[in-house]
Image 1 (cartoon, rainbow, N blue to C red):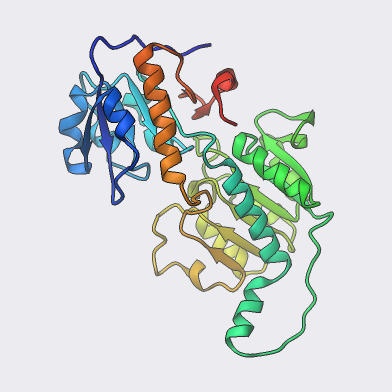
Image 2 (cartoon, rainbow, N blue to C red; image 1 turned 135 degrees about the vertical axis):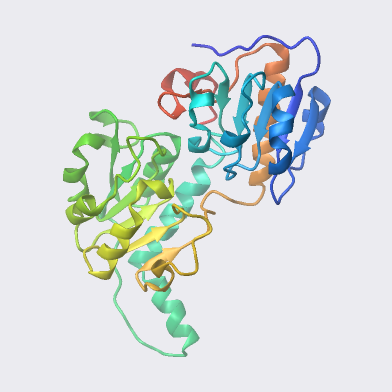
Length: 336
């Protein structure tokens, strides 16, 4: 199914929600439309007259409270792969088309996950700590070849992770909505409904699923109890996938060996969180996909879609708002 919006008779009015960092490389977008940059306090005033809304500040929680009761944009683009902050009823139940930035983060996140697997297996954290203490202490480390990885989420990011880990020698399987064999990237995909069985077999559990009503809190005390005591949890999806208090208890009790967390329910992670001080935890500030030039890539993707909108062509990366991610029928226009 193609998603073609009516071609605007005049240059479209584009509202861009900026945060602390202003988008660069916007000259072409400004040529295609009448662009207005706003911060959160101005958003409610700007949205009713907008044709297009570019949610550059993709971590903002202000959109739901600022959404107009009448009028407003016919197309919303978000500068992230996840669209959970746009899942409020007024937008989800409307005819407004939502597109995301699928494709920009796939390979960088896959590289980051491989780095985390190696950091755990080769105990780099202890090496750096001992170096700082000027202590020479020989240790043995683990091999990753033959280790088993479960990637929860079979979208483009999960697939990139699967390819990268497989190339490094891990045995990878996936968990998604539908169980199947013979998948080109995962081989075997197990149903999320049978996640407990898959968790029990994995040395590394990598979360790359979107945050939806079905996936929120999927890694809870029961799921953690199913994991191997030697297993590590890696979350590069959304913080809400994990019941954080349950994870803290499991780590404290040694029920799993460690966790690497790039996303959290509350961001920034509060200084009071016990996760900061746990020796078996790696905390990073939601940066797994942020490589040099990533912001410009986000702008270029939006600008390409804006050109499609102005010329009456199908938009890329159209989100199925019922599912909360880009559906399989949108694949013809995907970057990956």
